[in-house]
Length: 301
Image (cartoon, rainbow, N blue to C red; front, side, top):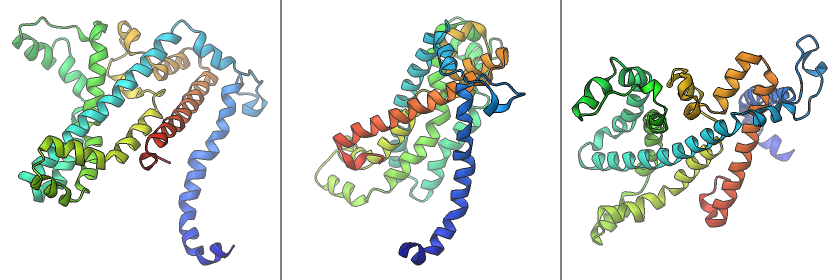
């Protein structure tokens, strides 16, 4: 109570944010009940009969259960690796460019890749992969002496296309974060390393990466928490609903969406969402525990 009286102004300032958090994040958790019920719209959520774990069983007993689980996990694992390596490389490269040529324009350099990725990714699929008019089939492949590819009927190429598109989409976002962390490093470290004769590679491996490791760990942990969730827009819109590609593009989110359109069972959708949240929550805690065992200073909490 003494702290409440002393800091009442700060608690008052915090109230709007707390109210938004409760309304948007906690009250909707009441909908978890739908995952365990056979919803009857006439009786409502509370009046509908309980089904236990039947909705979860349906999700994993279908013939596509292995395919959608495999695709979701493997794609997200590749996304985590690529979203670490590629943006980090871009951030280090742009920081070197900033140091050498554009010291006064570093903010522009930081946001340039993010701007480009958000603009271009919106029309990337059609402009590059259209069978008749796409840039790849009309220009790139003939230049290399290769035959045209029917992109939306050739499932073998999509395990490479989707990670590439996802990397292009997010490279700017993560580059901004990593570059902001790099800019925060005291220049005296690099000056001392240069005096000692350290090469650029040693400066990167002994100074840059170790000092921004907490940021790298946090961003990786947040992605691990969503490893059981898929980017619905990526997997639904980019393949353009081509049934031939379902074995390599169908993930949990798109499968649940298509099942809902066919069956109209919101219980299945809620069960899938709850399962994804529980798995993500567990993985974040497990990953954070491992990080704390290695170096508690780099842990998320």
